[in-house]
Image (cartoon, rainbow, N blue to C red):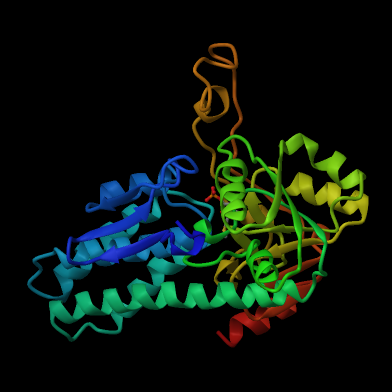
Length: 353
Ligand SMILES: CSC[C@H]1O[C@H](OP(=O)(O)O)[C@H](O)[C@@H]1O
């Protein structure tokens, strides 16, 4: 199957389901799931069956629209009551990626603008707004690829952490978008991929994506990034983002801030790529970003047929960390490239939404 024919999330209103590829089965099995209840959708987001900030937002928007098609409401008030219940429930699945909340809020605002219409129109409003969210994300990712590629040169060695590719968005990717565009234009990048413990999004998903796309890819353990940089094999680091604070502090997969420190030490540009929808102007700095903590079993026994740590060992398993703005060379979005200090550019971008 061609990489770009994989669909991360879509709404199938005929069968009343949010359809996703189950990313926990990749790379071995390409399995699609039809999720018909808000509980199934919540669990799919929490277990990272669908994941990546923009993909979570698109999946949640489609999920709410699908669930609300089945509601036998008599008027706006009880339709909106059920909508609010489903929206708030899905919002409780994961706390860090801002796109989950901005997508759900867009649906909320769309409904509130249509209080005087019938229930069938309200259902259509949700379908249309969810589709608009997906379409805007796909368009943003291509532009991110173009802006990102303008900073790269043919033959460069690149390093990336986690998965911010086609599987993390609706189409194409963010951090991987310039790599795909470069592949189309013969840039001949060589890409080092951090496996990204504990859930191995790099090994399982980014390596899978880049190999399928015919990119020269090398998988490394997270603790090898310094050695690879020291040998001069990396000329730029590209990573995604889950929430960017107003000052540019960026929450991304755990381990990202360590890569940024290494990049600074070795004098390698460190680029964050993502849609402006991931910039949260209500979050002044990284200190205000809520970092998801996950099940310790992901650290002690997720990938093994036996425990790799003593019973009862205390485990700290944050899913994200925050890279301080001063370690970031540039933040690349569909609206262009921002350099430190980021605040004014962000205000401009978010003003002309
Ligand atoms: C394009 S956003 C990708 C972003 O999301 C990942 O987190 P998770 O796999 O837990 O959803 C990771 O932080 C990626 O950089």
